[in-house]
Amino acid sequence: MKKLTLILALFIMCSVYAGNPPWADKKADQHFIYGVGMAFKQKAPRDVYKRTGKKYMNDYVQEAKDKALKDLVKKISGNMTIDSPYLTGFDVYKDHETKSEYWYSYRMPRKVAQKIAKKIRFDNSKDGLDKSKKDFEKTFDKEFEKN
Image 1 (cartoon, one colour):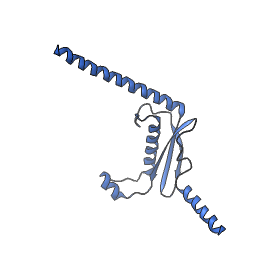
Image 2 (cartoon, rainbow, N blue to C red):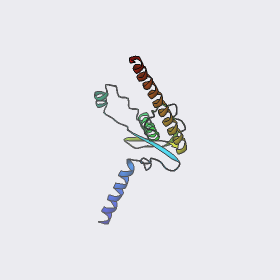
Image 3 (cartoon, rainbow, N blue to C red):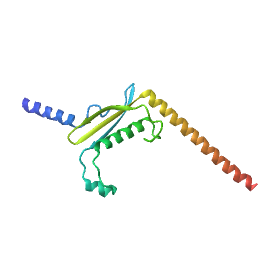
Image 4 (tube, rainbow, N blue to C red):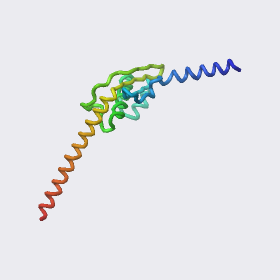
């Protein structure tokens, strides 16, 4: 019975490790913010074509990198896109490959992420103020024309 329990425990531990790498759940620590992405190595090309209408290219490495970058961007600021000129200062943290999955992670220093988030908030506030000013001017002009 002890051997069976030991074998079962060993099997479960190997199964868990074969999937997610230990750092896959890492969101942030006191120095860095992390973005993690995973892509399956094999996909059914017909299913992809039916869903998207595009020919499927199995570039799982690029897919995992893109997902990791999107995850990092989302953690910095929900308003930022991956093509933002502010998105600088990040580097590759780790990657991990299994038989069926590819994992990739970027990291950015927390201080850099905070500066980017402040800059984006400032720009969004400025844009909102400019829009409000234009709306007010349109409304004022219409009211002035009526009188």
